[in-house]
Figure 1 (cartoon, rainbow, N blue to C red):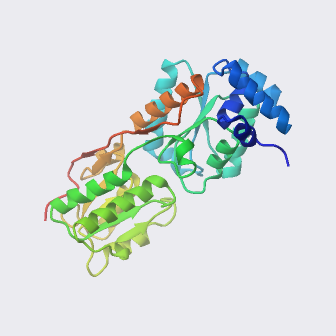
Figure 2 (tube, one colour):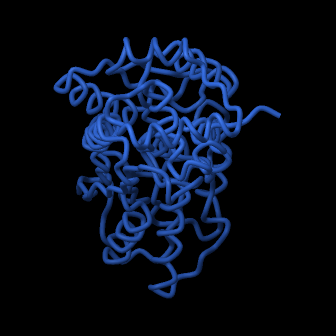
Figure 3 (tube, rainbow, N blue to C red):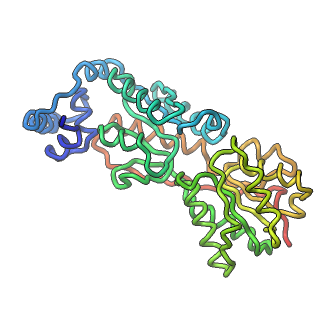
Amino acid sequence: MAVTIKEVAALAGVSPSTVSRTCKNNPSISEETKEKVRKAMIELGYEPNFQASNLATQNSRAVGIILPVSARETYENSFYLEAIRGISQFCNQRQYVNTIITGQTNDEVLQVIRTMTRSGQVDGFIVLYSRQSDPVIEYLYSEGLLYVLIGKAYHFPNQTIYIDNDNLLAGQEAVEYLCHLGHKRIAYIGSDSSLMFSADRKTGYQLALQKHGLPADPDYCIEIPSILKDYSEKIRRLLTLPERPTAVLVSDDILAVALERVCLENGLSIPEDLSIISFNNSLLARLTSPQLTSVDVNSFQLGIEAASQVINHIENPNLLATKIIVPHHLIERNSCRAL
């Protein structure tokens, strides 16, 4: 079995990314550290791709932006567009190029990453999402490639640079807001719980219910992994329960718009019959009627912070992994009312 970059890093007592930069003869690595890494390579018989390393040295100052696997809906979500806008703005200021990496399958995304790293087209990556059991993150880590995560790290949390909101607290605060308005039957509609942000917002919802002595009815908690598939029936079942909810916390503005549509089809008025709080404070939240109360997660700032961290670690590879929490705030509009 071929020797991996992680084995070299362990023997040399450095991070995998330091080994990768040594292979590229990065000037930010001290000669003493390079010598330790090279001795470990010789001892283990590790053979780096020197052609890619030479190209990387010539074509530096580039960041790859990795989108989640999706056939379509990712590209219609303003969260990713705003995060990319923040990344691009910061990269432009520091004279770094950025490249979008996406695909319909994990294998497709991984192939693009392999091609770019072998040809030295990129110095580091920003991953715009965080999910459980992600082969993309596993590959980046195992190969010692520099990456920054937007979202809480599920894999290798102590070794991962990540930028996130406190989504658990945001979920709690949104439910607290509804409780203060007098709501006691509060439901939750979320996207795929394998996505870390959705799982945390759901946990925050559950903790707030517990704090206020409200029952966590499983019928009040539904997941819609893809808005492109039939979501109407799940929402309709929720809204036609014998004791239907009077308020709903929704993990994303797009899902909230889908909820509004089903309400309209079933003769329910917002906020008279149902109060709604969503997340992201996107353009959709401002275009609906009534406009949505929404938690602004500052996605533009998330992008700026991610770009700042990846460039700092490109230029200073011995920095420790950093965790940054970007604040959120609730934007009150007309989709909620007091009982």
